[in-house]
Length: 90
Image 1 (tube, rainbow, N blue to C red):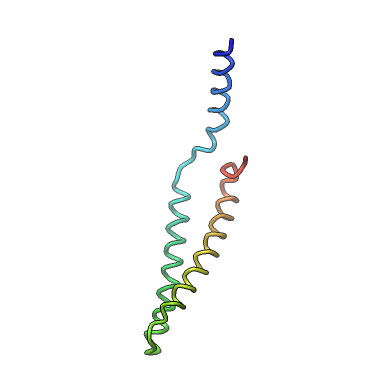
Image 2: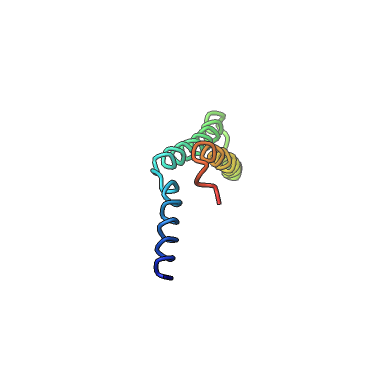
């Protein structure tokens, strides 16, 4: 009897967990866009220093990329929550 109950629970859990298993293509696209975004911000800041013939401001570059990365992660999470909300349901 307990074995049958356990089988039913495992089966119900597997059916409920099935929508959570999606393709990772959305995540790959979002993470690629995020990486390109942070890289572009770094390049723009480096290029501005290079064109102005100033020494490269490493700390400023790290700060700009860090802020852009955090903002990008927030946007990435919001987009993922909008497109695949079942991944965030508890």
